[in-house]
Image (cartoon, rainbow, N blue to C red; front, side, top):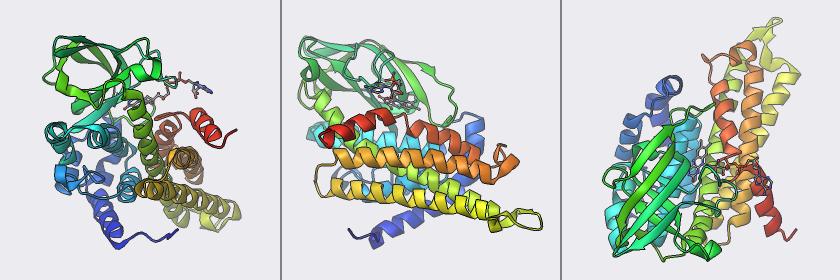
Length: 380
Ligand SMILES: Cc1cc2nc3c(=O)[nH]c(=O)nc-3n(C[C@H](O)[C@H](O)[C@H](O)COP(=O)(O)OP(=O)(O)OC[C@H]3O[C@@H](n4cnc5c(N)ncnc54)[C@H](O)[C@@H]3O)c2cc1C
């Protein structure tokens, strides 16, 4: 494997890094404190043409590969977990399935505005009663003439309160198990019966809206069915294969950000007449943080490259997600420790990375579920 990023990827990394330093870093803590979704940041990301990095340029995307997308997700995560989370949910969960499974007409109507960054997208799988066991859902869609009528409740849906479209999973054939689930494109503005009932307060990532949705007899025309009727579960598995690479990339960014804050602080803070970075205990911690971050990045890029080569990616993406999410939490926790009492205050970033990192071990399949997936792939 070539470990160097191609020139194009390094260029986009620099563009996004500079943007983050100028525009995002100054407000990264403030938007968390205020629980404010930073719409202006996403407008600017649209101006930079990065809201559809891995989406074909035929439908308004940048036409980049998954590796390039992972690089962008890492850069956003390095500065703001919230912006990174909303960004990856928009891209890999809400946009990519439209590209993979939509008709030309659906792509023109629903994918283009997402890829061009006109508005954000959401993806609604989880329900109050079904998380890890996601196929055990209660949301239903019944055919009525040439319309589908969707009823149910969805839980923890990223971006839903800000979204111009939400992909909703629903049971269309209750007796058919995995083959009885379908995906529908729902328009939160125009479709009556769609309501965001809760925007959750969370231990972190509070600038990224996490919503409970009510779907009360939401009527959508036939052309809002994504792909074949009954293909919704198969689409979900493929979507999560890509989605886990996103969470791995975002986690790598959180780890990198925490590491950088800790390194900078350790070089400046003096105790016992010397910078604390001169103490073996602190230096070893920083080396450990660097090691974990590098490992997370390597596994993430390996999974992304496999995805781009069209190779099976279930094991590689689950492994990257499992490892990088643990790395993010561990590195962020170590960063808090390196900063001592200041690390425990909200004036310094490590506490924010620590709180944000915890979600990475939960969203898009918990660590326990990643173990199950990897074990199955290994034939264990
Ligand atoms: C901030 C945030 C954003 C999210 N964004 C989205 C989104 O955009 N769209 C969406 O559809 N969902 C989203 N989710 C939902 C997320 O994917 C689920 O929370 C996650 O899959 C876990 O489901 P659960 O919360 O119901 O936990 P549960 O499934 O109830 O799990 C509880 C515990 O039991 C363990 N467990 C469950 N089953 C097993 C098993 N078989 N073996 C071992 N342990 C097991 C779990 O690992 C966990 O530790 C989001 C969640 C959060 C918090």
